[in-house]
Length: 262
DNA sequence: ATGACACAGAAACTGTGA
Image (tube, rainbow, N blue to C red; front, side, top):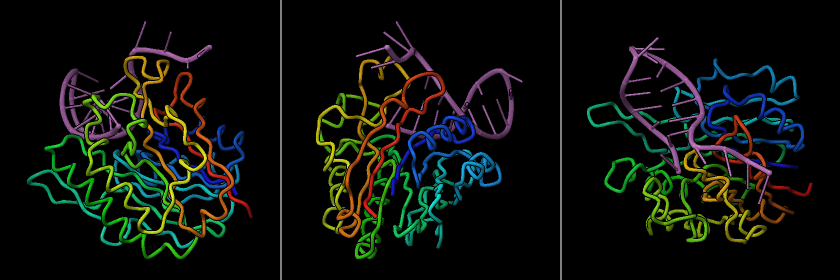
């Protein structure tokens, strides 16, 4: 089975490109983040025509997660138990569309879009850390099954995952607290599988649209695949499809692909 | 050998991202 994760930065703006990629990459299950639409706005037809079933969780034009699968999609769960809510001061906090679980084949797949954090003194940063901590405690209870926690973690865990630690736009991605919250999944029974197969420096998954970041390879590695032991035992390889950042109409993130033996 | 922000929604600007 081939399982991929991709922050697509709007599924409506990029559906043609996503479908083309699904077919040429021969991917069985794709976890998407930042679909930026409600379920009724999701371009279902091209996915279904290509042979994929869909699970979609979107509340508005922000965030939004989905899973496309051609190996079945069952027991769909929107948000994880205890998932933190967020709202601006004076507004009613809501549980945002940032987590979607489904069983595809024999694998429990979670498509995850961790909050950005925005700034070190912003309430969004505390929200980010809490989101990761509660998720980890839930994930601990799923660790006995073949479970994949995949998506945009908005953390650059190692110094070498970040083109410049001085990038003010990503200060919440490199703090000791954010990095500790990321690494804590290892203590909950998970292995980050992209690192096992791709230990090299400069293997990024995101490049900002601005300032020639991609041609200069000034990016960040922030999209990951955590697997429980039962899943990690079946992993045979991970690739980062850097080519998907090229050309007009690219997302600012690229797919990360995990291969599993049957 | 890739290329100089992009997306959505309510209005020709604002919020959001990283």
